[in-house]
Amino acid sequence: MTGADAENRSSVRTLRWLLFAVFLAVLCTGLGRPAPSWAAEDKPRKLTKVTLQLKWAHQFQFAGYYAALAKGYYRDRGLDVTILPAMPGDKPMESVAKGKAEFGVGTTDLLMMRAADDPVVVLAVIYQHSPLTLMLDARNNIHNIHQLARGKIMIAPHETELSAYFAAEGLDISHMNFVDHTFDIEDLKSGKVDAMSIYSTDEPYQYAKEVGPVRLFRPIDGGVDFYGDNLFTTDDVLKKDPKMVQAFLDASLDGWRYAMKQQEEIVDLILGTYSKRKSRDNLLFEAKQSADLILADVVPVGFINPARWERIAQHYAGLGLLPKDMSLDGFIFQRDGMAALPSWMPKALLGATAVALLALLAGLWLAAFNQRLRREMEEREQAQGALAQRTGELEESNSQKDVLLTVIGHDIRNLFNPLLIYAQLLADPNRRLDPKTVQEYGEKLYEAGRNASEVLENLLEWALVRTGQRQTHLEVTDLGALARQTAGVYSADATLRGVTLRVEAGPPVKVLLDRHQISTVIRNLVNNALKFTPKGGEVTVRVCHDGKDAKVVIADTGMGMDENLVNRVLSGASADLATGAKGEVGTGVGLALCRQLVLVNDGKLSIEQNPGGGTVFTVTLAVTDAATPDAAD
Image 1 (tube, one colour):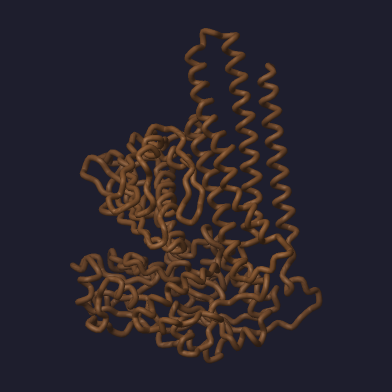
Image 2: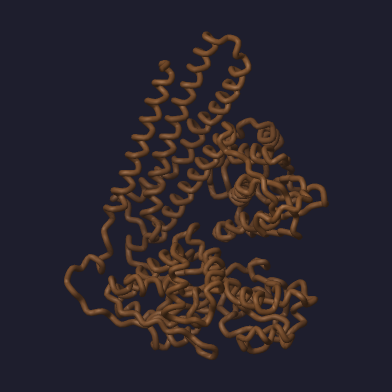
């Protein structure tokens, strides 16, 4: 064994011990958090009876509440919960407002109820994006919302979100033909109506199986991105027993987290306990579609963004449904004082600390790896002067590590500065921070930690590609569907930033590519475009082809890139540090990774100035005529 080999093994052992220490620290921190006060009580207590009024019949749409009841989350918090379904003709939201139930599931029409002096209070947002949409039979000749404006549309009460959609598309709803909802797809099948309002998580499966393909017109396609199902209560219930309300909320969110992880189990629970109205396959379809709108893997379940509620209220005010100066004070549930901290704050602080430690470990490991490579080169050069080609390869690899070390030593240090600053501000006992300021600091801390995590992920991916450890697995894929799935994940982020994100997948186009690698390229380019586009700007993702080449074009109206920076990215050199529209610190690692991944997929990455301001990234890949089955559409 050479001295270099011994040192290599020692470095690996050291890294393993450091990672193990971080794991123990994170584990101990998580276990050390105190349990909720209701859960901590030892003495037996009488269960408090409460009722949850659903907005529709039993189905996976309400899976989290079934899970909370079945797993004992409500009982463990001292609650005896009855779950009531709704039927056509019922007014479930009004039932809660009138005190017939303590809790309910409602739409964004809760804003209008609040304005009408119904004291409703939103506790949590379950669906971060609304599933409400318009469904048409794909065999008819209506291909856009403006053609539909001349037809018959069947909608239900409390679907005011659709009015905002029509207004956003420039339609005059006073001249449109609306009919009362029968909730029967036979009316659409027979042509009695041209479109009906449905949930994208539900009816498309039934119609496609019984009748044929459907066409969907989604409000989000017109820039109307509202919240979906919201858990709510009333001021009276909240004032009477705030601890009970908090206990119900905590148990419900625990139930939703469980339901998202154990979807098949909850589907079987629904069939065995609540309703056999839908088949198992139908409920599994609903579960998958719901998960894409709840986004439990992107934001904490139940997350509420007050600014987004304000934008929804502005939409309704533009329709004359709300006063323009309506205050949302008291509409969104908050705890007093420091308890108003977002539920994700402890996890964000813990995650930011873990990311900082891992970044430090990665830097130390890369430094040791770089030193080992240099020593190995010197030893082999002395002993085997004839291996010039191998030495050249090592020098190239070492050069790439130098670039990584430059980023570790300079750029990542800047990434973690805001983490330390805002953590210090929150931890300072001499500062008396109001809840709004705490919320602001927490959001900035979370954003900084997420940016650092993205850079580390790109660094590791780049290293795997450069060293040949990430193999390329080509398969025939619909590029438009891949772009829509990948870019669509950022719709919530775009909304929070006040940036319009448009995805135009175009007609199907088959390309031979590595799905993971090209998805990583699209993800990085869309994320960069959003990061460097100011509030009010626009990011467009468009897929097109000419029969020979397929292109993914990602255009933004942001601050743009100068020619020197473009040349450095396309040549493979390290890009300079840049600052995003919200102060995020960016490096050239993501773009360098995109360039490398496009190249290994036999493609081309080009960067141009957007005539309207900003930057246009174009990924060009060859269209395939292979008859291989689709990987995914």
